[in-house]
Length: 392
Image (cartoon, rainbow, N blue to C red; front, side, top):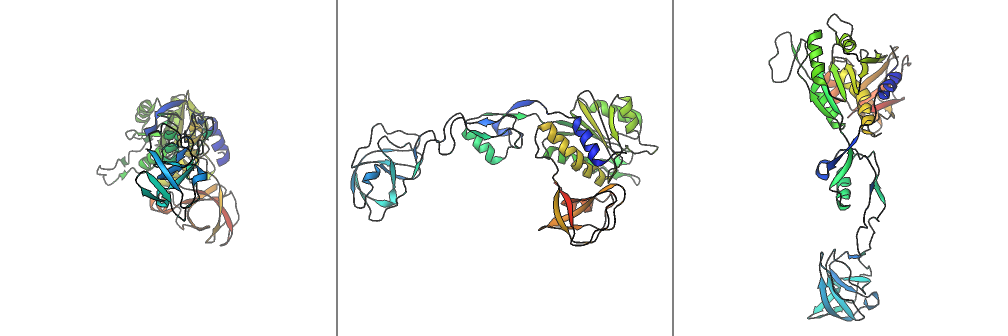
């Protein structure tokens, strides 16, 4: 049995960053940028008016000054000429500034009289010009590789005229639940069966973390059924089995991994929940056997699979970062295994739920944190600081 830290290190050493692919900008949201996004033009590409009004020479922007209006220009248009002294051009927001102009008078500051305007007594001194390259300049790195693309990033890429975006390929993840006692939602369980739940929670998580999850049919508690399930699971970047990884008479995952020539990296971790977890690799596919208890499986997913997918995607954004909060209740001394306890954090304080059984999904659903207890840690009092990981 190895430590949690050693297990995580060994698991991450099995993975490498996946190759990149081009995605349409419509489908790039939530993807990981594979290369720096570099501006290919200035934005705006020209000096433009920031308001509806009149383009003119700043020296003419004086109270009661009368100017001749010699034309008009709207966004998408162009004034073919140059503005001289005592002249103005009617201009609209986003339109290119005519040659000779260096200021815009907002329309509220002018009285119109046929082909002339008279500037009001009280005028806004702002020039209302969006300078060429004011947003960004050609050659500027606007987004760095490894970033998870969000809506504002997509808008920026669109403004850069990128119809396609270079992103990391999503990892393909196959999920297999094992157990004679399981049925999928929508089926009627008999008196000795239960509805599989962690399968769907896990699939939701891996999709949220940027992978493509695929739920396979339930494997029954025999080697033949598990073998067939593993055959269906590949090719994949990651295969996750749920249940059957312990040492009971019907726990066959470890044996089947060996039969499939999956080189085991580790088996059993000194942690709670999640002791009976194993991981290995065959060719380019990583295999992880999670415990069958729902909380154990989903907590292990946060602790191991989340950063593993992050490494495959080439991003640090999925790493679990330890934070600190203040305890709202006393805690007894911890045992010899590292313990990840479900809790709820608010405003810098964290409450540990009294029930920590690894089968209680209702407690996990209420939790937003995993409180970290070191092996053999002494008892803690209300008001002590304690480390925790955030839950998704």
